[in-house]
Image (cartoon, rainbow, N blue to C red; front, side, top):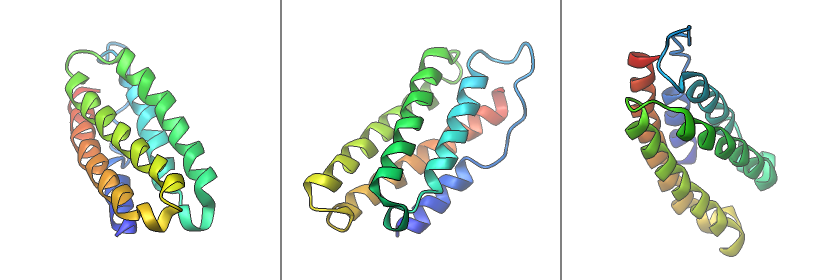
Length: 132
């Protein structure tokens, strides 16, 4: 199930980069950086790479997400807010990995959070394609 969710998130963060030329909507550079860190996150395999790699990738996303939230124009704000909410849910689920006794015990919660994040990313990608 996790592989399917990660594939969805990767598709949502696909190339679709229409550039961020001068005069582009405020926040496009930051949102495109967020897309890059989210793509890197989807390439982590928690089972083989370990939870430390996953937590590091999550930290990178959080940094880029905070920058995007601060920089986006009004047009992108709702889509970025949805990604932020979904990402917060993923962070909460990942905290359960340690407290629940490992990834296996928290896999369903992490999978559900990743699915929600994938849906939010699809919306954000659509907005970026139209705006940036």
